[in-house]
Amino acid sequence: MQPDNAALIVLAAGGTGGHIFPAEALARALLTRGLRVALVTDRRGGKFSDDLSVPVHRIHAHKFGNGLSGKLKGIAFMALGYVQARLLLRKLKPAAVIGFGGYPSAPTVYAAAVAHIPVILHEQNAVLGRANRVLMGQAQLIATSFPQVAGLRGGGNAPRLVQTGNPVRPAFAGLRTQPYPAMREDGTLNLFVMGGSQGARIFSSVVPQALGLLPESLRRRIAVAQQCRSEDLELARTNFSGAGIDAELASFFRDVPERMARCHLAICRAGGSTIAELTAIGRPSILVPLPHGHQMEQIANAEALAEAGGAWVIPQDGFTPEALAVRLEALLTLPATREKTAAAARAWGTVAAAENLADCVADLIAAPVQGHNGDHNQTRAA
Image 1 (cartoon, rainbow, N blue to C red):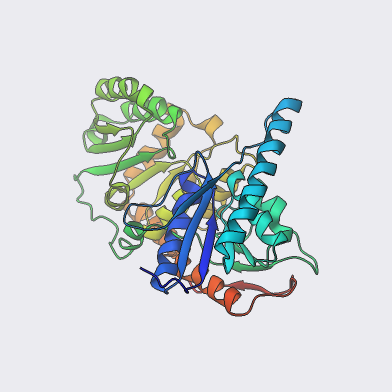
Image 2 (spheres, rainbow, N blue to C red):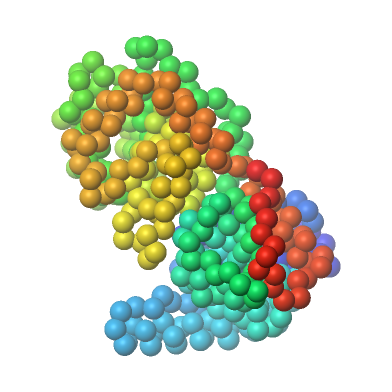
């Protein structure tokens, strides 16, 4: 338990795993440094793991919908959230506010800026998210996960940039030293298929059909662990059974880090947290980026890792059973290629991101920045 007079850091984050997971990793790093931490999210947002005694404060927030009524509803909720956040910050008196994106972070970050509380924004993707894009002018520093982030503004009044990486949960960090799984010539090939926090419907259809097109000698060596939406489980189970594939299917896996570490190849979406986790452990992947994000951020994420040699990308409109089967037959018969890609993924990733970001917080609260310095861009040690 931290002393009552320890500096308090408020983390403002949307409720999805892509925002909550890096915020939780930073919370752990800050708590070990003797700081206090509080989380602010909206009423639908999650909380940190039960082993972290971090208080959660919920405020009103809502994304801006389509049409006049949707926009007015968003404005009303954001205005109410701003008033709630302003009162909350006045009560908590934090030393700094760290925004992790998502519309629930906006009222708290803006209230902090108005109250002259130092602000850091963390961006998990290779494209600046909507909330961070709107709020970047209020921050003293923007911490990035990717070397290049689209949407950042330059100029004399721009915030300072530091590439910290994207913080990952301790379970992933602890597996970084685990080598790529050894492989006998006729041994089992472990595939891990994960389509984001709720699965991806297209994976439940395409993956089993693709595996069914592989030569029988290769198909009988494959073991699959696949996350599916609950409503897609029966369809996927039927498709895998028809293809004669040993598949373990679930709507939720509690041991994702261990399964990812055991796999010889992953098939995934390309969210910021997924990229951080794959590269923290160092596993090769076929990435199928979600094509309908607000700023096409998953496409940018996937392309960045592929350019570094750490993954292969198949656009969703080209993600057919036939195309995937061709790619899988090539990759599953080329262990040296998989190992080389695994090494490139690991070299691109880091498990120091939480500590890097905690260093930025410590620097900021030790000597709050007066104004912005757009010429001071840094990359923290990986």
